[in-house]
Amino acid sequence: MAEHPRPRLVATDLDGTLVDRDGNVSEYTREVLLEVERLGVPVVFVTGRPLRWARDVFEHVGSHGLAVISNGAAVWDVAADRARLERPITPEAGREFARLLREAVPGTAYAVETLAGIELEPGFMERYPIPDVVRRAHVDELLDAGAWKLLARHEELSPQEFWDRAEAATGDRLTITWSSSTTLLEISAAQVTKASTLAMVCADLGIGPEEVIAFGDMPNDIPMLSWAGRSWAMADAHPTVVEVADEVAPSHHEDGVARVLAGVFDL
Image (tube, helix red, strand yellow):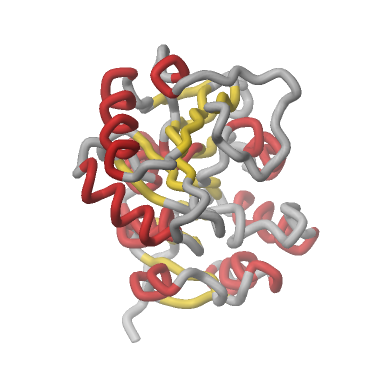
């Protein structure tokens, strides 16, 4: 078996990958992440979570203080509490996409994620708690200032069918992916993925893809796992993710990321 160079950066998804059933980082995983950081290897969280949910785990990002959030729409500088990089959807591109998808798939409802938080159309049925005061308006109005992510939900189609029909209707105008168990598409600006933004972070650090190891479990992780020099799908990952990953890690319920890192770095 070929020897792999010691990684210079670890990139990991959060939900279904690093955090436990309750969305927390276990004590064992916490200690392993600290040990990896002490070796001078940054652990970068690369997540579809918006800022309001990513903050829950920022205490674990280590001394480098960077996280890729909203599927690559922003790189957040935790120490400075500001975006170091933003890659938003423009109002024009978002409105065109939303119109084409709704014409092709009636019943589509939209929400947007921005720096300020989530805003929804009246017909968008959010499954998670949202602020008591949140703007509800037509998607054209919600996109007045652009968005980090455009969310599209359908209450009758399966996730794969909705994704297929959305891509057929909109082409490559924007980037479509999904990471939810419900029929929710997560739409980013054209060519914005976890991988493309992580590549920018690594370029700034002088790190090549062959020096990166990555972990994920859902289709929005596929570009990152394909880009990284070594990649692990979690044991309970989506089948399409297992197909592209180099190896399979124990599930997130079993501290799979930490157990792999402990082996890779001889901890």
